[in-house]
Amino acid sequence: EVQLVESGGGLVQAGGSLRLSCEASGFTFEDYSIGWFRQAPGKERERVSCIRGRDGKPFYGDSVQDRFTISSDNAKNTVYLQMNSLKPEDTAVYYCAADAFDFCPYFEGTYYPPRMRGLDYWGKGTLVTVSS
Image 1 (cartoon, rainbow, N blue to C red):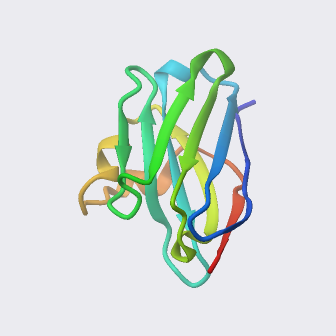
Image 2 (tube, rainbow, N blue to C red):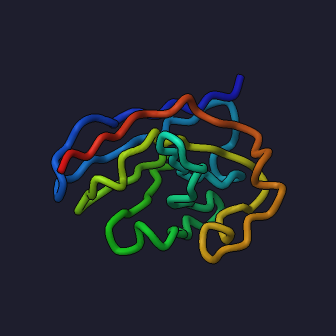
Image 3 (tube, one colour):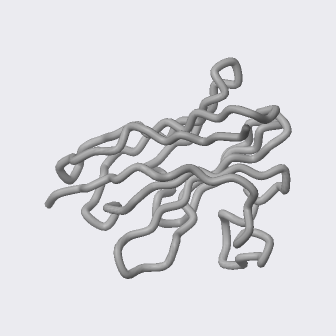
């Protein structure tokens, strides 16, 4: 059974940091891309960051570039999202998703391919709240 389990969310003051984890099981980690998305109340889902399992290349959305860092520990089947200099507008539920389709390059730029609306596996999310 494939599972993605997010953790690490919480309440933090603006300017602070959090590290999210996405622990994966049930598939070969290196064959998949794993991405972080977020969704704030009343807003559309937003691409945050993605890492490609086969080569570890990271990709970032414009709004988090230079503040967030994605990494992976293949031995632990876990992807991390280090979030620094957090802003109130970063408040959202953060989800990780995985697919064998290489969707990571689409985290940069504006094009949102239809295939990304149906990624194979999703976690249940973890809430990040940034207070001002």
